[in-house]
Image (tube, rainbow, N blue to C red; front, side, top):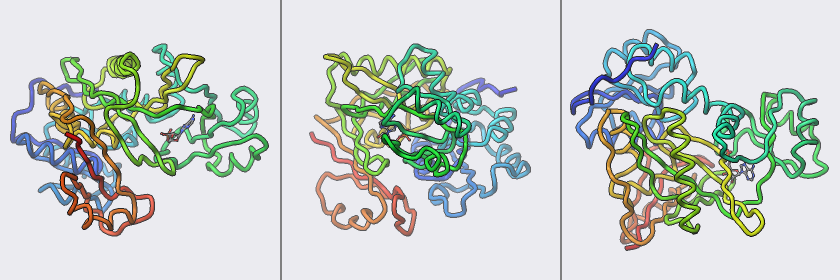
Length: 364
Ligand code: AMP
C-alpha cells in the first residue's frame, strides 16, 4: 500500500527528507524558501543537512520506532540518495506520501534492472551482461569484448565498485576486486562527451527539463558541469525526449537525472544512457545560480503537489565546478572572485575524494 497526496501541501507543512548529505541540505534550504518546515532523517551523526533544519532524527534506517516517530511529524517524504533500503521505503510509503515512489527505487537500485528497463523503452545503453559468478564473468567477457567495465550491480557511486578491464587482464582478480558480488559487465564506450538531463515531473504528470548539461569527470568523480552542452540542437532534443520517456514510464514525481554518453556512430552521433539518478543531481547544481528556478526548488514543488517553475538559463553559459577534498581550502581565493557563487557544504575536515562544495560561474 502507498499513501497518496490528496491535495498540495500548504506552507508550514513539514517535508521529511531521508538522508543528510549536501543534496538533503540544499533540498532543505529550497523547501524553507517556499515556507515549508523540514525534518531530516539520517543514520550518520555528522550529516551536513542537520545544520540547516530545526528537526532531525539520527537513527538507523531500520529503527522502526524512530522511523514511525519521524513519520508522525511529517506530511510527505522524499529522499536524497537512492540506496534507501527497500523495507524502509515500503514502511514509509505505507504511512505517508513518498516521492519518488517505491517502484522507482526497485528499478534504479540495481544496474541490471535499470539497464533492462531502459532497453525495454527502446532506449540504447552500452552493451552489457549481468554477472553473478566468476564463470559468468568469462562468458560475459566473451560476449562483450574488451575494453570493458565491471561494476557492482548495487551500491556503487563515484566510481566505487568499478574496475576497467583491458585485454589480457586477469578476470579472477577483477572479480575479487569488486567483492565477488552480483555485477554487470559493460562495454567501454569511447564517448565523445558525457551529458545529463535533469528533469522534473509533477504529480499531474507535467514535465520540465533543463537543457542538456555537459559533464567532465576526474577520477570517476564529477569535476565540471557546463551549459549549454556542445551538442547539436537535434541531439539536445533527443536527450530531453529520452529523459521524458524515462520519467513518464517510471510514473515519476520529483527531479530525476539521466546520464548519457554521446558516441560517434559512423558519421552520426548516438546517445547511450549510462545511469538514472532518482534524485536531485550534482550536474544540476548550476541551476541554483544559473537558472530561473533551481533543481532543488523544482523537486520540492513536485513532491508538494505544486506546479513546476520554469527552467530558463540566465546568461550565455554557466559552469559549475566541484570542490573535492583539499580544493575546498582555496575558499578564501574563491570568495574574492567577483561573480563566483561559492557553495560550501559545512562538512568539516576535507577528506580526499569527498565533495566539500561547489562554485558556479555565470557568464552574462
Ligand atoms: P557510473 O558510476 O556508471 O556513473 O560511471 C562513472 C563514470 O565512469 C562515468 O561518468 C564515465 O565517465 C565512466 N564510465 C562508466 N561506464 C562507462 C562505460 N561503459 N564506458 C566508458 N566510460 C564509462
